[in-house]
Every structure is written in C-alpha cells, then in structure tokens.
Image (cartoon, rainbow, N blue to C red; front, top):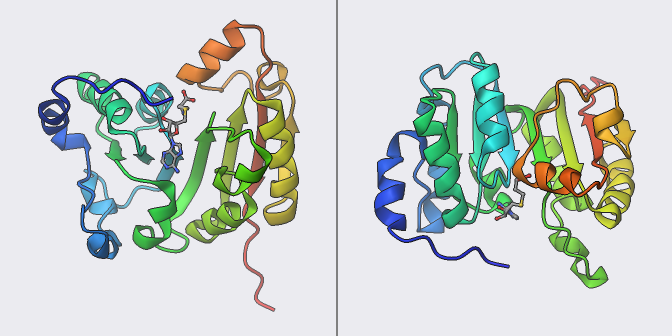
Length: 224
Ligand code: SAH
C-alpha cells in the first residue's frame, strides 16, 4: 500500500537539503554521481555503510548517532516516507547520514565496486506471490550485485518478520553469498544486545512475531 501523499512534500524535502543527496531526474545523469557520494559527507574518507529501504529512518539515524566515525547512506524510493527519515536526521543534527531518494536497482550506477563496508536490508517488501520473486531485495541476482559493491570482508545484514521471505532468502543467500549467521529469533540471539530496532521491527515484535535475520560476509577475493 502506498503511503498517503504528505502535504507540503516539496518544501519539506527542500528544508532537508543538507542531508539529501540530489538524485538526477534524467537517468542518463546517474553515473555522474559515481565517486561523488563520499564528498556529500563532512568526513569523506570514513567507511561507507548503506541501508536499502530505510523507511522513516529510525534505524539508520540511531546507527549513525552511535557510530560517528562511519558514513551512512540510506536509500528509499518512496519520497513521502524518506522525508520523515531526513527530518529525523535534521532534528537530531546527525552529521554522518545522507539520504538518496531512488530505487535500489540504480545502485551499481553510482556506487563504485568495493566501495561499501556494510549493507543493511530491514523488513523489505515480501512480494508474497510466487511469480514476484524477482522483485524481492534478497533475490540472488541482487545479492550478487550487492556483493560487487562490498569491499572484501564487507557484510550484508538482513532482518524480516516474514517467514516466507526469510525462507526464500536463506536459499538465495546460500546460492549467492553464504551466510555465517541465520536465526529465527534475533531478539534471543547473541546479537540481540546491539540490535537497533526499526519501525517495522517494533511493530511486528510488539505483535509477538519473531524476527528472522541473516548475516553474510563477502569473501576476500583470492589471488589465484
Ligand atoms: N526499513 C524500514 C522500512 C521497511 S518497509 C523498517 O524496517 O521499518 C520497506 C521500505 O523499503 C519501504 O519504505 C519501501 O518504500 C522501501 N523499498 C522497497 N523496495 C525498494 C527499492 N527497490 N529501492 C528503494 N527502496 C525500496
């Protein structure tokens, strides 16, 4: 379901200009962003982490506030939602987070190979009909694409409340990027303590649903 169109969306986005990286409307201009993402941060040399589908930004803003020496790029294709995330970052005056309002499929056009130290995907759309599997953000072709953007030893962390998406994703990860950690109950796992809860996570775990999670690391390229 599409969120209701927010009133004053354009002026609100304009007020968030300090934390939003402009995304070209003319798609032929997207490659010009390559190598420019880092310079949008006060400390361009810090490691770069990416969240795909940040929603209202609770997770990425808290993560950025806790880790001032890392740059966090969040992409979100829904402007009505992304504006809430950008306002959150502005309100807390978080310096090391930037938002890009675009679809994940554009990533290879503006992120350099090996540029990312970490990727987070939280509660992405399950696309529950079988024939829709190619749209899922954990579809193996996308996992392979994310992997090219990760540096050696870079990690991909995934969380969901949706059992079918989890089950599908375990299979996809095993094919494309073998996981080192799989759980059917993140909140009771060894990673529970440092886990930063997203908006969807708070909602679904409040309903008593377990949170599933998968973590994988990109293997260092072998020389031989
Ligand atoms: N991560 C947030 C929001 C989850 S809802 C949370 O856990 O609370 C999934 C979000 O991903 C939505 O806001 C949706 O607009 C965004 N999204 C889905 N597919 C996307 C894509 N291909 N590219 C960018 N954003 C996407």
